[in-house]
Image (cartoon, rainbow, N blue to C red):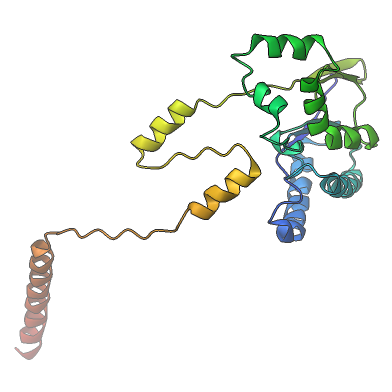
Length: 254
């Protein structure tokens, strides 16, 4: 029976603020790979499910490709020669200007039927160009990486289908771009219930302002606690100890 094995990785966020920790993480990761390979290798595929980078810059994708080069060498040393399957995450696209009128209309996706119709019907529409531009660095990286499992590109960036075959067995993959709208009312209700505060950050600038507005707060609460029983327990313990020592002393001198 043919067996197809894969290694699943996600959320590397290469290029993030913690990049100084990457060398130490690499060493620990490599040791974990050795242990996992003994249990489930050799691997035919590496499946990376999003957030390869932090901000989707061309420089970060170049760093990610360098990391993949190291990873593939480690895997080769272990006896694996896999193909790569990836889907982009929300950190793998360059955020468009939130004040761009086209972006603002896309934000009305659910309410604006004409926007949806034009988006799907016209591949040269301003709406589609915004999406293509956001994923341009990811698409350029994916086209050039030598590790990928070849397949058929879908309608939108990141969409694809591919098939991996091994010794008469095959497994298919599909990747889809999914539009997700946050339920802000529910999030606000959760914040109220937990005595928290809800913030909306539509852009990186907005998020930075949120962080700047947050202050570390030490809350001190005065609360009366009954401690009489503690003193009673200590007194009882002392009385018991005194009785024991008294018994030992008089037995010794009798």
